[in-house]
Length: 215
Ligand code: URA
Image (cartoon, rainbow, N blue to C red; front, side, top):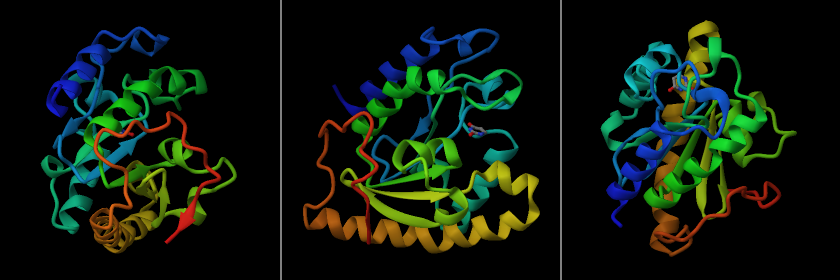
């Protein structure tokens, strides 16, 4: 199966998914979208109201800011892949519950395996928690990169946080400009030396957080 076919299969499953109650009272599953050959893979939290209506990730106010942040580093959403930890909108935009996150986890695992990105950018604490130990606070790790399970993972504040807290906007802009191009350059260097995850290598579902190495 090609990467496109795998992603399309996952999207079809997400649209019909009833693994948890989040699918109730939503209009669409939001599987994610972007370049099947993306080197950069962004993971947000969960779809909001606009995303639920349109079935696409990050197309509301936080998405407009994400587009601006990508433009700051010379990218647009078609060159990267964008998805969320949970694929249906939680009611009233509440935080996703642990059982909803684990019910949805396999979709994200398969998307990462299919695309095999060099760099994963976590947006907010829910996607960060998939890769970093629970004791790590986003306020202390934002804008930093770690090599985890054969990829480079960069933790970022969620763009929605920057919409609510003006002082975070400058921080997230600086983090994007400094950390993402550097992580990509480092990842390309490591890949050329065969030190990153190989295509279609099956990742572990829950990477052990102890295996962190700061580069
Ligand atoms: N916030 C998210 O985390 N994801 C979206 O898709 C939209 C807003």
